Picture (spheres, rainbow, N blue to C red):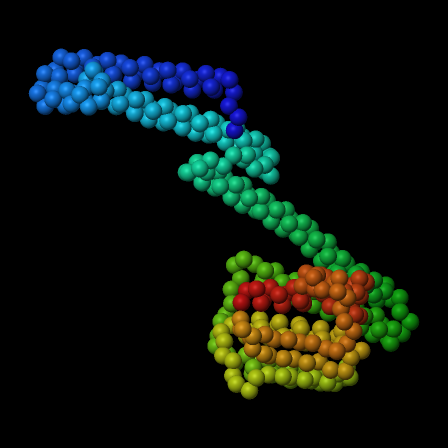
Length: 343
């Protein structure tokens, strides 16, 4: 904080004013001492001792000392108050600058004491506002992306359904076999749409801030083993050996079993779907320092490293064609992550 010439003039004026006040007090004290206090024997003796000991022929020494102390204290208080006032003015000016939209601006001074705490609180408040604005912008962008992706994934099967049903409606088929073929394709495309709509509904439900869990006590080891058994046949048909490695003892926990089953099903079905060039799928439950971990892995081709950070984003697919032959809705892992976050 820089002081200008007029600031120094104002400080000097305050000091002179203080000096005049102290001088007036001094003169009044001297008058009272001469006419009243000096006539009191005890005080008269004290002044006489001062004259003898210090060789100063003045009874005004105590008054001078008191007046000097008062002036120093007055000067210190006034200068400090003036500096705090200037600091407050600068803080207010910079606050007005921030309020005009310059949210990344930091107040350039940090005074000591309560005023410094006010500056810290302002910075924290502005940061919270920036974070909220960024989150709102991200959510808005996320909604736009959601609409775009849903529109894309619904349009493709819907176009096929309309096309093949149109052929049936216009009797553009040679025989009943062709009719059944067209109806079957329309049916399969409708099932794809149904999967996407159900996944989208599940995703929005678990992402809702008001989402809740139906917690019950259960054995996690038993739950994992039961879900894994349901995939043995599917894994065998894909040429994969399903291995389940769990602790011998029970692991009691509280959670929403329906939602946790959904997590396991998503992970295991992905392991089967994308592990066909491997030989086995290993499902493990093991203890860690911070709790229990569940691992689902296959020994097929590895996911490229650059795709790993995006695996749990909604609609993300490692293969870019978004083909229904090689992948699902792209919401499975996003749903799984949201369920775990809920827990």
